[in-house]
Image 1 (cartoon, protein in one colour):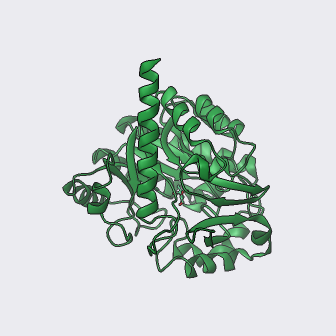
Image 2 (cartoon, rainbow, N blue to C red):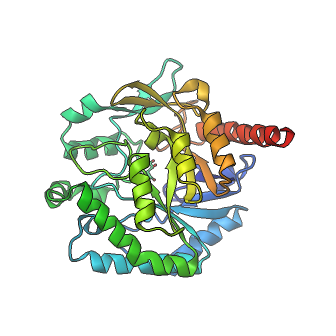
Length: 357
Ligand code: DNO
């Protein structure tokens, strides 16, 4: 596995490439051109500049998270053609720059959702958390404002301000989009981008819905084993793959992560590894990465990834905010560095135990 850290670019991240370079065994970053709104072309020049900046620090770009999908593609509006064309040019430019993994999601309106970005734990650290009862009481428009007000001044991924202006309108446009329609629009999109992906050997890694159930009555299609396999089969080619996000899929305690890993063997192009604590259906907190701190068995998850021969990029996902660090919620340096150290230790132990068997 290639150990990486997510990095939002020097203008948007409190963590620097120099700091990331010093975390043992981290060889690359997963990054993005954060300023380009969904739907617009990523110019080759900007991609090359980003690449140069990362490589100058001794790291490598192991993939992009995310090239966001314009809502017209998800809704299936006639103007999607223009936005798909733009997406194809972006992929072509990434391919020319030698970047071969793209994480994206197909969640309507909102990317991931949380009800609290800084829930205090007994040890004084804070975590992101989700409580369906609280979400049910929130007007989606207010949700945007709340996320924006509580993100320590950073732009949260998936909650970019340009989306805020169109929330009401967007909900209206999604009115007739059910799960089937959303799925068909995803398959249409994947078939359209297939040639460029295959030409440049680009692996598309869809991020599961987070949380793994419908929010604000919007459709959800990447939330369990059955639906993931349905997508992998609908466009049965290697480029059409998955971001195995343990926290998103694991938000639903009925999802057996190791079973999903085995079922998606060969089609997992990227892994987000983090733990969460289940409280009751629809309620969970994020946690430190280790098994002891949450409900997921991180050893078994890493072991299963090793067993299926996964050798792509992996990153510790959201961490806790600890030691007074002020960063984008979930994306501080300290707890993610602890996460890397823990995952490195697990991987080493798993490999050693496989050798001695
Ligand atoms: C949250 C992230 C998501 C993820 C996108 C991928 O922190 O896990 O925003 O990057 O859903 O497209």
